[in-house]
Length: 335
Ligand SMILES: [Zn+2]
Image 1 (cartoon, rainbow, N blue to C red):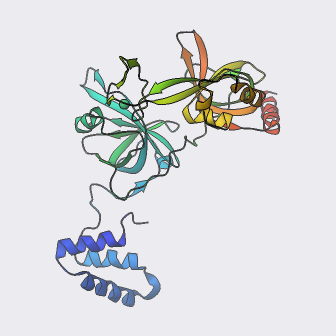
Image 2 (image 1 turned 60 degrees about the vertical axis):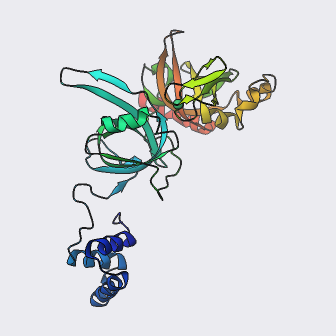
């Protein structure tokens, strides 16, 4: 609740006032006796610290730790513990007002994902040196938020602090944003829409694979027998699956592109076994065809093929009833 533990405060008092733990405990005991049941032991240590003039909270950096889902645009002094999901490229920019460098990292916790925008050169260097990797835990302090309600961003400026894999800090595996996307009919989709679509799988393509750096997720090519990542040097790559299906909702259909874990989620198994064996995939294909899916994601224009695709960020199966209900709702709003 206070965001700082009993032991932390005891240690703070110990170092700042050079008094023993026993003495502190006896002061806490006295406070508890004085207040009866009105305060907890945690409350008592705060009072003791105050009376000894030990500052429990650093005024510049409030200690409240947010969950990702609670980050909204326009907040200052945001503290979050989050896990790295992907690391972008460092980019240089120049505007009328200023020039510099920036890098985006996607981080998350069990409540959602947020884009971390790093402007501080000190941390950009850390990213450049490959010292921030997928699965790393970041303790983010004193960040500020921008963006929109649906896509908040957390910015790391000169007053912010980033601690990589701090001892004792754990973060659960990030999940896709639970923020509501809003449902759209496929025929109404526009470039860059971030929405949900619900439809039936009417076509399934064989899975393909590409090699990627396990630390930053970037695609890597084989050159002279060596896989080289621009950031992490020579690496042993991981194989990332891609699966394309056509989803049809009665209004139209669209190619849905799924990467990574989503492929395994859809086929209910590890896709890697189909890498060299397309025939074995036939059974999976017939299981998937006709499935009804809800897909959250973004419409993206594939320039090479001059077509719209739906880049899936999360999928879930829906039952026929849900599809029918949605259809009814749609009819209700129309007439
Ligand atoms: Zn890499």
